[in-house]
Image 1: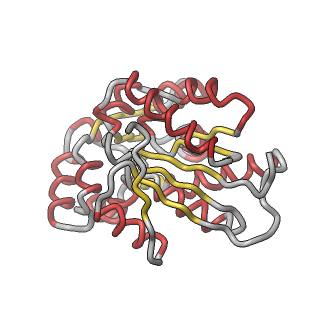
Image 2 (image 1 turned 60 degrees about the vertical axis):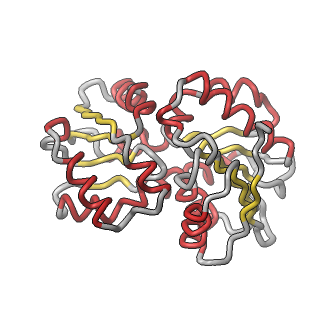
Length: 268
């Protein structure tokens, strides 16, 4: 495994771009291959078996393209497919998920607060955040709630609009999240709603900014393993299983450049 090999990042759609963007900013020498499985989104509505199957197929694609690390930039896949992907990949690449760095941050900085967690049905149904937080801090107070309309709304480009503002209000005013002091956006799509959510709470709730936390963790682990590329200019490649104009628009918004999407359905 060479330090110059690329880092693979995958998600069901545009959400993982939040993590890929944070990584690219933090690791300018690294090359990245991003795969958005837009043909099967949202993963949060799929069975565990389906998510595992999709994740392993994408991991094989990233391995075939020489990736030294695979980032499961999807909370639904991280909560259901992580162990299967690690076992399948073995020692061929390092495997990272988006849950453990966030849990460590919460326990370190917010453990004495009432923590709210919002995500897809798959992520919230797994109870992974609450289990992992309470394993490290048994007395932690965690309130979880599924917000399944958020990811498809974001995929359609409805962030920062009256549609997203009203949808956020209808979810976050529910009693499940009463009196929370910080909120984990437990879906990599949700940082695109960060500003709208922050405006809803008017500063009364701390919003956990997940992509930067995940990127810092991955950088530290790659450095520890001696796998960081010491020089060069990173290259970005973007693949989707089904082309959508909104994906291209969001990718260009994040990377502030013309983005060439390559459509590649791994299941055909």
